[in-house]
Length: 451
Image 1: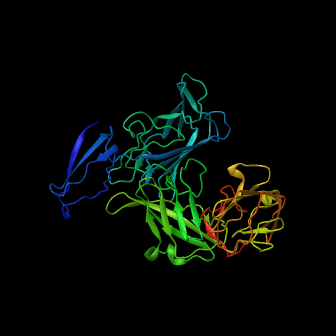
Image 2: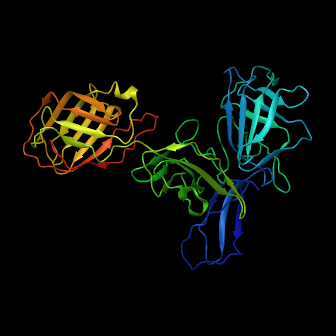
Image 3: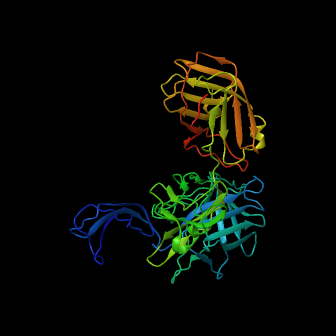
């Protein structure tokens, strides 16, 4: 019952020795679930939750997306896409229908017969996506005005024709799926025990995905930020493309995978990767002991561009940082022409620390967003105060993969006789390659060199 506290007896298991353990328990049809520590003495765990008003096996909408063809409310050409936590079917015994209600109390009904004005279809790799396409004028009720098509619009009612594929099919009821209220369009609000992000992994922050997935070819890792995956899901490599990767990483028996953390983040270590490697990912949520729900393959994830270890300091090479000296930044992938044709003048500042820090910005700005690179020397002190090189010129070569900056207009006093040293190079976070992929900001150690 709603607001109850239940006790689950784990009587069918072999219990470990006395100690502290974490047990992940999936309870279908329960919201706001929390668990007490497991007791190895009594074999019990306390579960506090809010029960649903429908049967526990009812399907749940993971995500409800909308596409407004004309930005004029619910109208012909609009599409509603409902992604469920399990495979679905549409029964044909009665009319298929759905009623939407906006914040003004206006309602629009879409249906498949009589005043036919919509089509209803189940699709998706896992047959868990319901697509509703508006083909005619909606039937208006309530206050009778045009129904807005936004996140304040909710599903007010549906016909009992949308069911799961269990032995005894259960019906989707959006009024009860959350224990209270109704399902909004363009948002996801689902029980804590079911996926809370779009089930198919996305490689960027477009749409409503809060996570971002990147391929670091320097560290040979695929990393998902918080929100990238369903917490607790198995995220695995489903395809390896391009060159430099390892095909076996996507083979079932040898696939590379990781378990998403509680915040949906994950990290998968690949066998190998280069700047030309691409991957695709899928995620899998175990629904029962014998059944799992697996997402469709993600969009192709290209390797991030990165600064590489051939980046170097040079010029006069006499140990003094002066006009005419150069900074060479080598990138693993071509930078876009739109960037290289405008990024040709730089302001360079040098700190007086024991290990000088060299910051390169687009000329004429001090904004962090305009930092091109930060170079930290190892025990090399080029000034006791601060040096600046304003409006230093830059040239892009090697197919826009190399930037050579020639220092000019020095102000400040430089030290002399600095020996050759190693330096750490970090790219500015705003840089993207010619494919629009954001640069990797992991520090890279360049070749031993000096000004």
